[in-house]
Length: 485
Image (tube, rainbow, N blue to C red; front, side, top):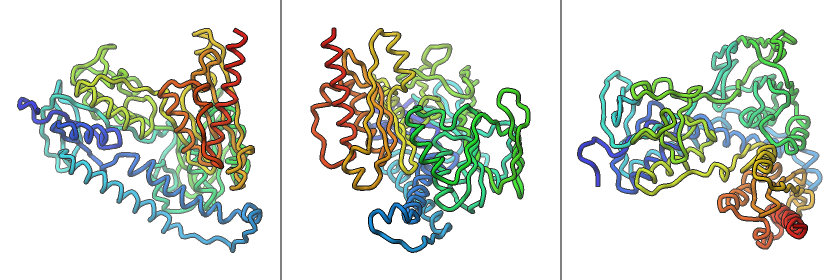
C-alpha cells in the first residue's frame, strides 16, 4: 500500500535501462512510481549506445560478409561488387531506436509509472526537485529515491569536439558521413566496434591507444588472436603507447601525438575525422548531491551490493543508485540488474548483486566476450586463498559447426579452481561469442563446478560444444588434482 505522506513511493531519476527496469519492477509490485528523464526515454543504450550501434554493426557486417570474395569462393559462391546506401543504413539504426524507445515508454505507461520530463535532482532526504524545459521548477516527495542518471562520453583534455569532424559515439551512431580516413582514439569495446563498422564500409582507420598495448582491457591470449583478425586483417594502423595530446577539428583534423611518459610530441597526423572513444564519465554534476552531503569518487556515487548509496561508508536511508553512475560494470544489462536488486531491497526482499556472473561482449565480427575473473584476478585469488588455478583452452578449429561456417578462427579460455572445480571466469573470441558466454555466466552465478558441467549434453553440431570441450578438459585436471591430494 502506498504511503499517503509522500507524493510517490519511489522516484527514479533517469530513464535508461537501469531506471527503466527499476521503475517497471517497482510498479509491477504495487508501488506508486515516477520516473524523471531530461532527454530521450531509454537513455544512452537505446538512443546513443547499444541499440543503434548494433544496428550499424548488423548492416556493416552484412556488407563485410558479401564483400569477402575469398571467403565466399570457398563455399562456391561468387558475388557481384557490393553496393550499399549509407543513408539507409543510418535510417535502419534510427528506426530501431524509435521503435524500442516507443515500446519502452508504452511499457512504463502500462505498468502505471508516471513519466515526468525534466531535469531531476535531490533536494534533501526523500525530496526530489524537477525543472522542465520551460524552467518551471517543483519539488516532490518520495519514500525512496533511485539515482540512475548514467554516463556521457569522456573527452580528455586537449581534444576539441565539433560534432562533425571530431565527435564521440553519441554522434557516430548517426552515421552522417563516411570519412575516407578516420582516427579512433581508444581501443576498448567502443573503439573496436566502430572500427569494425567503418572498415566494413570502406574507411581507412588509425587506432590510437595511450596504454602500452592495443585492446588493453581484454585477456592477452584472446587479444593476440583477435588482433590478428580485427586489426591486422583490416585497413587499420594501430598505434599503442601514444597520447592524443591535441586534436583540432577542421578539414583536415589535426592530431598531435605525444609520448605517454614524457608528453613530448612524437608525431602529427592530418585525417578526415576523429572518433573519441576514451571511455565514459558519470552524469552526476547536476544532481545536487551536496544537499545530502554525498561526495563522489571521480564523479561516481559509492554504493553497497544492495545498491544503497553510501556516505562515509554507511548507507543513506531511502537513497539508492544504479547503472553507470555507480562506476561498477558500465553495461546496460548491469544497470538493469542493479535496478531490480535495488527495488527488491526496497520491497524488503534482501538481495545483493553478483558482479562476477555478469558477462560482457564486444560485437565485432567475430565477437569477443568474457565473464567472471580475468586471469590476473584469478591468480591473485588463488594466491590469497591458497588454491591451484586451472586454465584450459578450447579451439573453434576443432568445432564442426565453426568449420561448416568457415569461421574456425576462435578460442575459449576457461579459468577454474583445481581443488573444487568451481568456474571462475571465461574469455571467448569467435563466432557468436556474445551468445556463448551466457552458458558460463549461468554456471558462475550458480557457483557450479566443472565436474558437474562436464556431464551436460550439448547439441551437435553447435558452437556451444566449444564450451563442452573446455568443461571436460577442466574436469580431467580437477580429478587429477584431487587424485594427487
